[in-house]
Image (cartoon, rainbow, N blue to C red; front, side):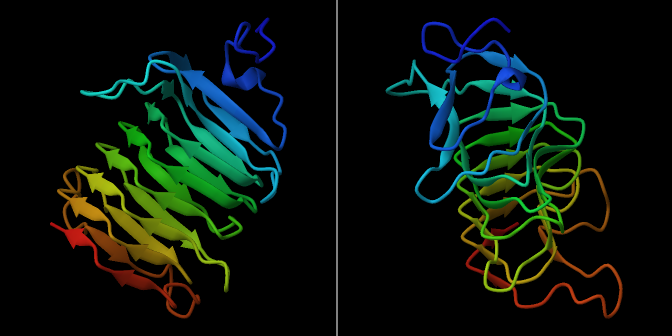
Length: 219
């Protein structure tokens, strides 16, 4: 409140942001933003949006990621990249994609200590990528996927998904690729859970087909 989004006078809360295509929105490393917020900006391939960090990047040792205590929801957003953040303490999914969200990239984040890690809802629009994140110690699923759009499948790749309470990756979607993930020590709060769990909601409901699940390490 009171900021204008410039480097000298930054916004104090993510909820103050007036989202625009072709813009980078950056939170200073080492700071904590306590709030949940929704991103609905319609970027394009030529005018994408980035949510990330700036300043104080270490040359060695632990990374000083900016922290968001709360949930980020991509609601009908497009061509947005979320990267380099530490997201935790969400009362539901720490990162959720829904209502037509497409071409969303969630990359190189730590996503932890929430009710669930990443949720791709059945209403999401496809061509989304969850890539290179560390997703750990969430009470529910590390990553849960539903829906799926033919020819526009979502990709889950190169993530470390560790010590979540339910399935590491829960898949009730179609046309998705799940590859090169490390999925370890999940299901620590619920008996009968899996590292990578595929299922349908009901017989004949048309989900759980045209999946590629390959080259993951599961333990």
